[in-house]
Image (cartoon, rainbow, N blue to C red; front, side, top):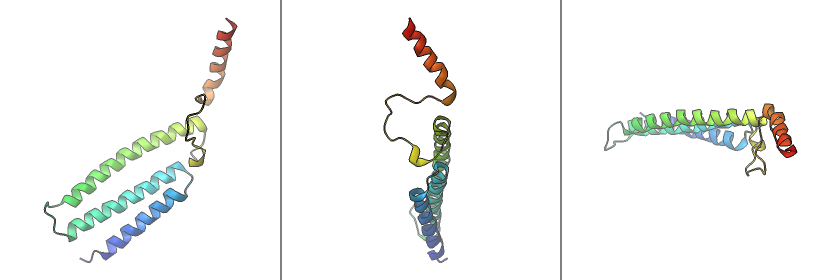
Length: 125
């Protein structure tokens, strides 16, 4: 088997993933781009396992399985963060994410009225 085609395909997939991470503004599309990069690495691991003589048999396939498990965990945590960001900010744009801690932590939209009423009641006492 000639490994050139899978290696070139993996390089194209990885390059497309890097472009998506650097260029996209939507957090969900950034997560999809990271998945493209992980799939490119899986393709390289499986191709190298089938073409090269390794000391441990099927080691590339085992590493690819670990990468798939880690990618599933990463997507679960990443989507949870994106959903929480959408609940707090009503947007999933990466540019709108604050990188520093705000002076007062933002509250969800439905809880703003009750929180200000509680503070006014305490000040009146």
